[in-house]
Amino acid sequence: MPNSGSGSTSGLNFEERSARGVAAPAGGAGEHAGAERGDATADPHHDHASRPKIDMHHHFCAPEWREWAAQHGLIDPAQLPRWAHRRTEDAVRFMDHAGIETAVLKPMLPARYRSSAQLREAISITLRSMMHVAQEYPARFSFYVPLFLDDLEASSWAVRRGLGQLGAVGVNVTANYGGVYLGDPVYDRIFAELNDHAAVVDTHPHHLPGGRPGAMTVPGIPNFMCDFLLDTTRAAVNMISQRTLDRFPDISVILPHAGGFLPYIAPRLEALGRFCDPPVDAGAVRSHLRRFFYDTAGPMAPAATLLAHVPADHILFGTDWPAAPADTVMDLALPALEADPAFTPEQLGGIYRENALRLIPQLATV
Image (cartoon, rainbow, N blue to C red; front, top):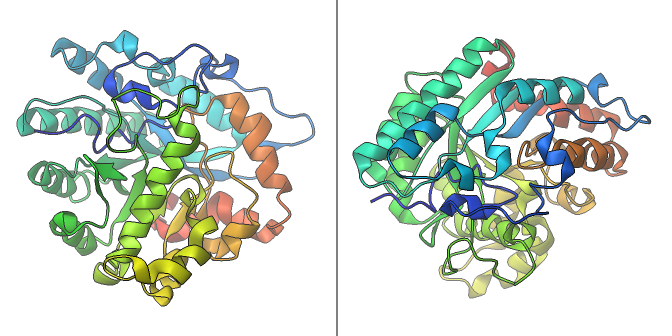
């Protein structure tokens, strides 16, 4: 049975409580003032729309899925965070303000599905909804296929359906499924299929394994603050340990939030990886760090540490909207990215748009 905390709960960034149908706390990061308005007040000192951008980290919760899931008793829509109810018109208004030409939708469909057939129906509804959005707003949206890797048959079907037939530009997976992290050999069958498609594999963190669903690991500290970054880091290290990119060389894996803690622990992993099981070779660490892709959703830390290990052409622009409120993106994340001394103007141009086009050329013809 598919697990509600598994694949394509990846739409859950700033408030993991929504994955279990628990209301977000008042005043949480996804709930402060900017979260509830589709517009954004731009910093008068920055013309953010002047640089065309492709948003590689843009969350989407299909209204058709919400209605269907509510009818089947899988969710209480009122218990989803308010940002999960944002309309496409809100997204377009935000994109216009930020200078975003195209957004790649990361689907959110969090529920505990009762059967594989029900999961497939949920995925089908979400795919149809994203296709409709892309058709209604030509050249503005593309989308990922949601995968639930704890259901291998449904995931295989979703790969064939979404990548093979419906024109999705990649797949979206969660860092762990019931405590089994990306890179584990149990997922090899799906990764082999993705390798056959030369697929882009977009990842997203969720809650850490073993915790009580919906609960903060540390009282008073939202799980998105630290735990989500650790979840991404664990997945990345496990993929390095299992040499995922060596065994499936034609996939491209995107790590969100600038790779979590991975860039900061890279020297530690190189020096101490021999204590892992199997041992992690320092060369494999360096190779995988340079082959992963990283998005800027955040606000991210200053980029000097990231660039010490990662080529600038592997960094992709991402907003985290609407989980990240418009004011967080416009007033904090974008100005910080623009002002980061580690980036040259040419590198920023690549991050905003050209790197995504090299990774996914069909975005130029969406």
